[in-house]
Length: 124
Image (cartoon, rainbow, N blue to C red; front, top):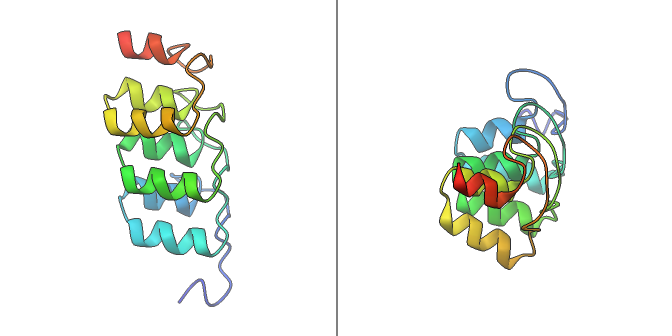
């Protein structure tokens, strides 16, 4: 109902930063899918989790990671606590997501975030 009345799917603010990030952290795949259809920015930066792809990887949301990648999320985008989505997935032991990101071309040597590289995140 709110979207039909013109609610901005990319508005920034609040605890989660964006409604897309909020839906990811709540694990609401159907809301994520709806927001993506309505033009939610899959590369928006914000908050300690960086991009929404990093947030989904950290949370272990495999289906959401797949949706974001399908919609063009930048797999190697830097930002937030973990640096990259690969580092977020590695540091939290999300093996299926790590495999998915590697298959899609994640840079294993990208540096950033708390751990520095994905290998350093794996060793932590």
